[in-house]
Image (spheres, helix red, strand yellow):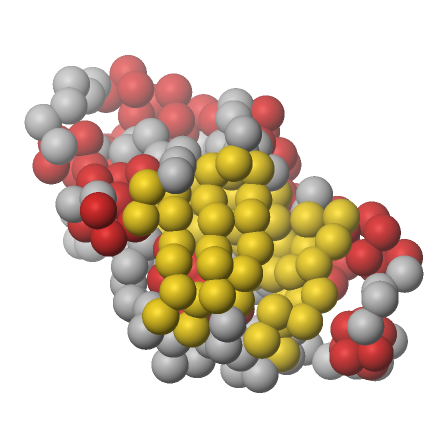
Length: 236
């Protein structure tokens, strides 16, 4: 089932982008710095707004959703964990409390265990967590809102190998639970490992899309080939 569709979308950084994504897919986004990868994510939950074109979520224009509801259903996790001072529990329960949904410590503990954090973390202050632990809690705070789509902006770029592996395993688990995921990464090997589809962007244009295995085996455009076969990094 189609979950999100872009039709000829332009913004300050993007030019006439069109694509359709089915639910329960992982889409990895790669390209040089400044290509517009993060900008594409920002438009989907209206951290930025398009200038022209159409973006539909479940066949409705995204502007037709109240913005709080849209961001509940299309959640975002950033490169730097956007957590506030307080405990892990206070951060994770923030969204459900904001939307007047029943929440309990048991639900927080269940989420913690899903990312290999023990129940004792529930009352830990955020400033006592390592960078990798904070990133996992940032995931959980977004997931507590029960989004259908997750937008991940370079979420593993500052983590050590162990935490990268934990996050990648968790992303695969989320897909099995029915989530649709858009993931910006500068690591082309990660994009190939995780992606069902891969988007290659350059200078605000969507140059090539395709099934990830096929894209990395045999890119169809000269610009994608040039990017993949040199030591380029895309870390917008």
